Image (cartoon, rainbow, N blue to C red; front, side, top):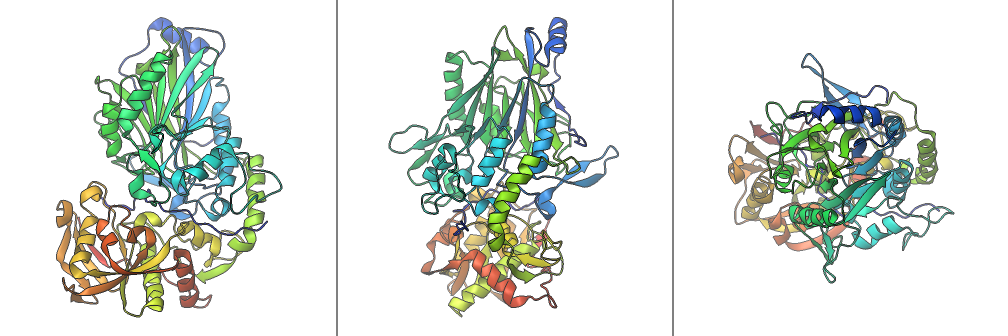
Length: 604
């Protein structure tokens, strides 16, 4: 079982005081089990772009997910996608950036008068400094200019709680930091949908559960949900007073309501996803059979959502796939995801039957397209980035360290994970010299550190903005005491319980080593007698002082044992700890080299 850093662990977003379609590559994914009648094909061909009123009307659905405020092109591996070539080899393609995303979407819409753009959640949260510094107002402005029609909420929309999400929807200046420019923030032009997120007191959705797109007699309903497990991956403060309900039950409930209103064409926007068999965005997900190339939570969800729903736009796992998964009636239904960070968008054709008001599902086709950077930048997006970049520059451009090469966050154990764990260990020892080790959750590492300069700082220079992009959450570095037996249990929780299907392998500080045997199952994958600290086995009854971020220390990401530690000391901000480490341990003449990532021995 491959083990990768999971992208969806979330904490409270970092807060800082602020200064007042050319060259797209297609992946085929079509429901071709049956064709429309000859007369329908004729109508579709004659009226596919909205001219006239034939029985069948093609509706273009453009979608993306997990943007996470990445307005500028993401750096390093976060800004690339893998593409399968005709001969079976693969290559990487640079992708992403809203200046390019806007150009691609606008080009895709040309000639498609019946076009709607939807998103699968996590538009904001865990954002780079350009957006995160301003509580993601820049991202909402960009999405407005992208002509986004509707999105579901994701778990990261709750990083700062329901009240802040409501502000992003409705507008208004930030309650403590005020207005960042001379114009009042107007909020999102598009509806956020939160069908399965209820106010615990009223038991009603905190935002609209669904929305209906209408054009010239064509009606398509959208139901939006986030994963039921959102409280497990967001800070307790972020979900305070909220209840998160089952995705399938919620979608089925509102599908019936839409049907009663005469809306028979329905798309579900689901912030939950799957794990494709290939990392290439354009592989054939349906080879050899429907949905065979994807696994994970979205498969069971898709198999149980009512057949009244015609397509599923998903997200959360940051993976790319265009698959068909059978609905409860055994009929194939399109399930898509466009990776993350604006690197891809999905173009789906829904053929609407004006006679029945429903989608002719046997004619649905879909493909993921790369947001390549070889097209002209959208000038309005460039102006938006320049406006907010000018405000952020005095904070973001400050150098904090030097590196000799790219420091990746990829892999079961990553070089950047080791670096951050070492930084937290060093910080912990500055607060308590008895600190023994540090643990870092992989989902808290949002981007790599890249050697190439992002601006005028020079190659190898790490700026505050780059550090912010890596760790954009306002976690503190906390110290707690655990027994050796508890630490063994923590390591087992990486691959058992809620983390068994999609392991979350903690990044560990220097001195801690063990073997991870992926040929086994569950907790047995952690070889207990291999665990060593500074070369010595853990003593089950001894006490160890451990540094971790406040989210992990509270039991987040499926690590309940970490919440059982004693003698907690709440420290400073985790980004400050990384900054201090980089500054103390690097210079232009002696930059930090990427750690070798050899602390965990992985048996495949």
